[in-house]
Structures are given as structure tokens and as C-alpha cells.
Image (cartoon, rainbow, N blue to C red; front, top):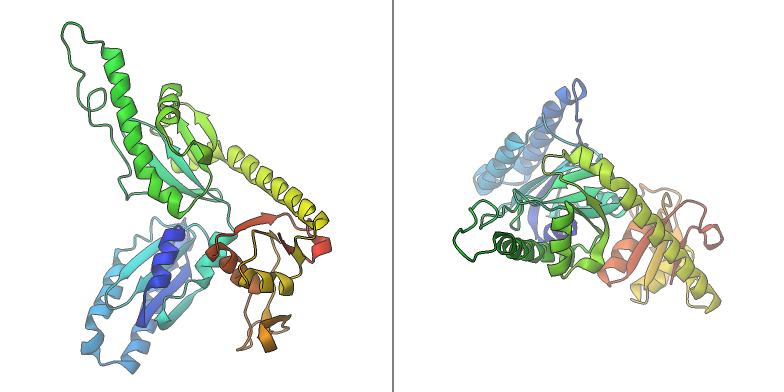
Length: 357
């Protein structure tokens, strides 16, 4: 799941929208109870809907929910599962992070837990260059999930790839092959474009020297590349690939953190910053936030009082309390084209754990 998926879910409205989330398990014997837990949540949603609606009126929704749940392969899952269903839409996501067990029925899909997990994860793209095939992965912390849409995985079907090179007098096969590889990697770069546009994350590119050189020559996205891994990894598993790229991902994250802290230091000297959750809330909603810095484990249950002032709350479960105002601030900053950087705990102590340039 990426930010584009979240935006799509958030745009869908109309009662009833059914959201089911639960944690799942990757191995036996823990995963043996996952099918029972999912079935119980589906039954709970069905029972609640039938108390409100005539069965005939929501028959299509109930059937879609049942089919979607049945199609989930719970023998091959990650740490979390989310199902989203209404009268016209149904989609399931396997997720590399745990989720609270919930059944939510509302005017919109319940995405808060997903947004929190995605925003607090280290996210990146991994592009593995190859003739058969080039693959794109979405990285979330130490997990890689292969993208199987938008043209990926992509096979080089032309001469020099699946098709043979032409023969005959005067034909330089190596030059002909190289030109066809350049054309192929132009197509790869074009297919990559919407993913980087909708979710501009750092990109790690993997491949043999020749393919890396070809891609670098034709790509319009070289500025997004945070690192490269050299070698043939056509058959490398996602887990092994994750281990290979992780040092580059960690290095890039640490560099961005240091750059953000240095930018904050300059902003402090120029008096172009605010600190504390309340002040950051105000400035972010005014659309004036360029860069938000947040300590990794900072949470701030809060409520809004007169004139939209944010104040801390003692009981996160109270009806008028935001469970974590930090999540709301992050979403506001991102929606207004600002940037968000998480830093290590203790780095923003003098700013009460949150600051904004």
C-alpha cells in the first residue's frame, strides 16, 4: 500500500463503507487462528449491516465482502490485513505492520491506522533492472512488496531480449542490442514516473553495471536515486534484496535527518520556526509549514478548544479527544505540500519533541 492507495480510499464516500483490520501472522502455528478471526470480523460486519438494512438492498456489498475475505491467502501473509468494501468497491491489502482488530462502518473508509503506520515507517522504492523481468518493489522498513500494476513487472520482449538479434552483413549486433536496451529502459523509466509522482520516495536501483549505465543515461528520475546496488539479482528473494538495500536506505534516512536538523538550527537563528504541538498545529493549518520535524515516538492526545486552540488531553479515549494530534499535523503538512522528517528521540528536547520551519 502506498500514498496513492490511501488517497483513493479517502476519496470514496457513501454509507455504508465497511473497513475490517486485523493483525496476521507469517508463520505456523500462530497463523492457524487468522482465518477464524477474519471470519468473525466479517460476521460482525454482516450482522451490524443487517440490523440497519434490508438484506436485498445490500446483497451486492455482502457478496463482495464475502468473496474478498475468501480470496485472501492467509497462508501467505504479512503482519496486518485490511479490507475495504462498499456497494461499488472492494479491495484487500496485506501490510507489513500490525493493525488493531476493528470493524468500522461509516460514511468513509477508516484509514487512520494505515496513515499512522505509513507515516511512521521508513518508506522507499527499489527498482531491479533486468531483461526478464525488471521489477519494482515498495519498501516499508525491512519489507519489500512487489508492485504488480502499471506495467510492472516488465519484460524486454524486443531484439536482444526475448527476440533474437538480426543477422546479416554490416549489422553491428552489440550496438543494435545496446540501442534496444536503451529503448527498453526508457519504457521502464516512463512506467516508473507515476509511482514517483504520486509517492516521491527515495529510489534504490539494482542491476549489473551495463543496465545501471543504460538506465542512468535515459532516466528522468536520477535525482530521486538514493543509491545503487551492483550485480545480477533477477532471482534474489525480496527478503534477501531487503538486506542488500537496507544500508543504503539507512544512510539516506540519516542524511535527511541531519539536513533537517541543520535547517531547523538555521531557522531558529532567523526566527523562522515554531515549537510545541500547539504552535505547530496552528502554523500547519495556516499552510505556513515548510518542514516538520517530529521525534520518532512522540504522541500527543489533544482536544480543540475555543478559536481552534490545541490543548493536551489526559484521556485519549474521550469522545472529543484526538487520539494523536501528531498524526493530524503530519497529514495537514503533507496535504499542503510540506515535508516531514522523523528524528531520534531526544533530538528535539528543547522544542518539546516537535518543531516546524
